[in-house]
Image 1 (cartoon, rainbow, N blue to C red):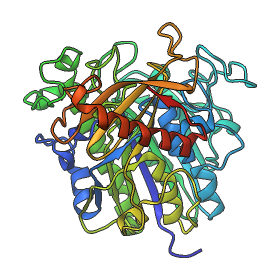
Image 2: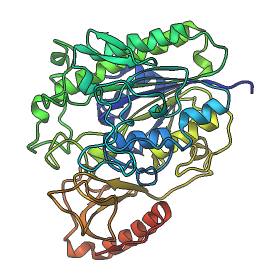
Image 3: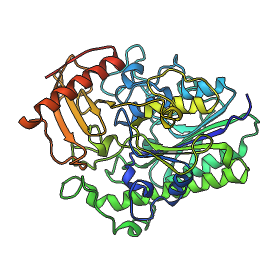
Image 4: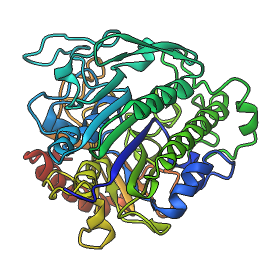
Length: 446
């Protein structure tokens, strides 16, 4: 197949869109991403369908809802018998490579995955059959936060050997990605997926760590409206968070420059996004796992063949759309997955009125996000002592309702408002239809 673009996916971890200039940040945090958006397409209404690390990443590799693949919570590996982004593009003639955090190899946690036992790869090399079809280059760690800190650590290569990280983790990971790009000696079009840990907090320290001394450059930030006046830990984290985002952007520039040096920049589709956002412990006791926009809204910018011109897209899109988008870009047919190619969103042939969100670990929940409203419901089988216990419920109760037009910071929960009764019923009916469509299951919502 001729005229296939190279594809480079850059994924940050736990990044809010409002950390990016193109999506409203006033400080110079993301000049490289802003330039890509100015020559590509920025998606203003982009969401994750599961605001949690492993499930969101399963969507990015499979194009299927987390309950379909069984990856509805952390600690559940990607099934080995499904078609993935890598295997689909390999079938189209692509070289496939992965660098960074994977988070889709281990089974375990509180409830081992049926039939797999507790195969944990958090601190050891991931075997080939658990790599999601990436065959040509592999330098990764299943839980990068367990094999590295902000300034030291390692990954594992395709042979299971340690690859040491030197310097700030974002810089070091980019060094590895650039080395993978340099070593590639292949005429096939390439898919390179680069997955950073930042700006996620360092798990054992409950704080984000930016490059040394860099947080001072972002100390004069405007407090996001959803955080202002709330508790949580944003006050001592947000400048560091922006500093980590700025580091990713600088290293995105290194990747773009390396592509440009090959003369292939205009023939490369660069896609930038994140797995989920962060509410900085203002909505529950940790950072995500809720239906608030702070958790589910993600940055999304594409620049390359089919995505040029500095356009803005305000259609509802989700991470379910990325596998179909990249397969279509690679010359394949729309694979008929749970999402749709963004190319069809841009040409107006796909329109959707809502995004379905699945919630786990903090609750057994579901939510619907429309342009105007968010409705979130909790399952009746929710057990606060064992929130991992079920992927779904037969009945749910309304938990959150927001008017996103009059209350974009989602500070006023209308779930118990008598004036919103008709709205609750209408959104609940729409949510049940969405659940039935994606999960082949029609629950009751009270």
